Amino acid sequence: MARTRASTGRASPKAPENAVPAPLLYVLLYGRNMSKQVTIRVSEELHAQLKQRAESQGTTVTALITEAAHNAVRDPRLDGAADAFRRFVAENAADFDAAFPGDAPAAADASRAA
Image 1 (cartoon, one colour):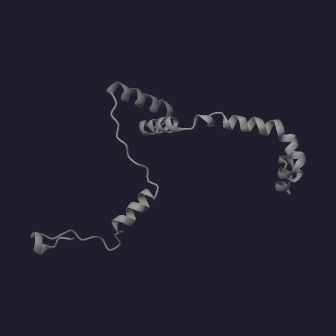
Image 2 (image 1 turned 30 degrees about the horizontal axis):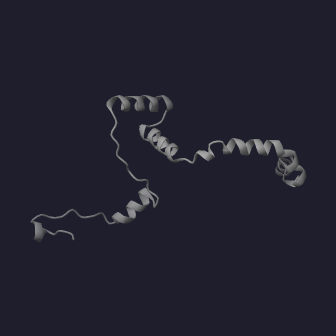
């Protein structure tokens, strides 16, 4: 409920004509999938190490901690999945090209050039 001069004895600040309502502004700034803020406590020494690592990698302490959290909950069965997929594709590229000649990289590149 907005306070008025009568209730407080002083004038309340007037919102600009083009002011965006707070809930809409919140959604626009943070989106629907806003990340949750988590507070952790670390020793001075650990913080200094994190800060040094972040600076050397050109990132932030928050990004380092977020990456560590992702790694903590990542499914270990997926660790080698990308490498296994790349090996499979490389080992079977000729078979794929024979089965789908129009989609072979050389054919696709030639059609783009035309």
